[in-house]
Amino acid sequence: MDVSNLFNSNLDQIKISAIRRFDQEVSKIPGMLKLTLGEPDFNTPEHVEAAAVAAVQAHESHYTGMSGLLALREAASQFVAEKYDLQFDPETEILVTVGATEAISASLMSILVTGDKVLTPAPLYPGYEPLIQLAGAEMVEIDTTTNGFVLTPEMLEAALIANPETKAVILNYPSNPTGVTYNRAEIKALAEVIQKYPVFVISDEIYSELNYTGEKHVSIAEFAREQTIVLNGLSKSHAMTGYRIGFIFADAVLTRQIIKTHQYFVTAATTVSQFAAIEALTNGKDDAATMKKEYVVRRDYIISQMTPLGFEIAKPDGAFYIFAKIPVDLEQNSFDFLLDFANEKQVAFIPGAAFGKYGEGYIRLSYAASMTVIIKAMARLTAYVTEKRAL
Image 1 (cartoon, one colour):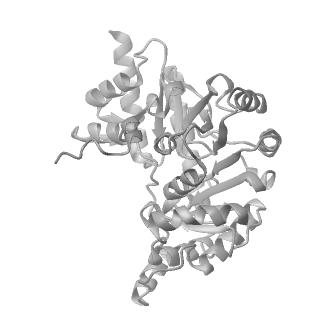
Image 2: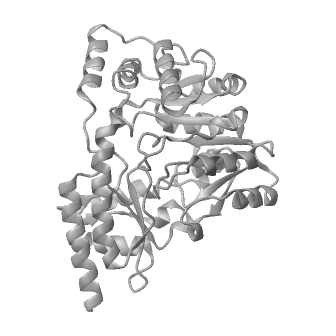
């Protein structure tokens, strides 16, 4: 009996991530230098690894409660209070998730129903839309390309008025793919708009520790707490991508609902990883500082090499990505441009079109790659552009 046509029909709208598909395709090319994925090239700090080993040796192999270890939630509460002036009760307002990805999934699946709309600044990380579609909702992109990738209160309010079915607004800052972040005044102004409407804010702040402005990261939860679901984690700040530890911070009223979805998705996050996370958030609370210094060096080097070639770049304020506009005299289809570049020079970036319709004509580079790889990649890009222009 054929059952292949009995799946959730919303799956027909969903495709495997264009980022992953492109990365896998070009990875087959011998000698490839990859500045594709957002994974730090740093090792997890040794003291965090030691905490994980100690947990294994102590036979910490049993389920934790659904919300995660209380000691970890207490550490997370203290961390965001000290770093971002946020106050969340570790017993009722924090959930430990399987990475920020599960935090996104649990949050969206808890609030969306068929017919809802979700507003997002664009270009943006492509991991949100498939989940929105799976819930039967629709994502509405707000074009920020003409404003340096910054969402203004006016843009947001216009989109809310035009889309009365809006259930949530997603913010991701510092941003993937642009590296843009927001200062206190900008976040406060966005919050003032949000508070006028009965909508959630899902604030994905996974790159909060990688902020290069010299100012403290500001969460919108400071201003619109009752409407905000803050997502964060340790993958980017502590180079712990494989540990899969994320967090949801939200008012107790919201958390009581989201935990139901979280529970049936995963039961609980991995126990050994949670013990490692306690160490990361306490004795390693400033572990990101060393990485930040190196990322700034890499960012500035890439900009110094690409700008003379004619690439337009909004200087990133955070994260570890360059989102560059392809010069007008070169191929504007981002997939075609980068596929040719990969075949000709064995270097892989990510096509801007992978980040939505407003990303076409751009390319994204991850400077989470080592400086050695970055230097070689920039030399090959220079050679490629020079050769194309000579034709």
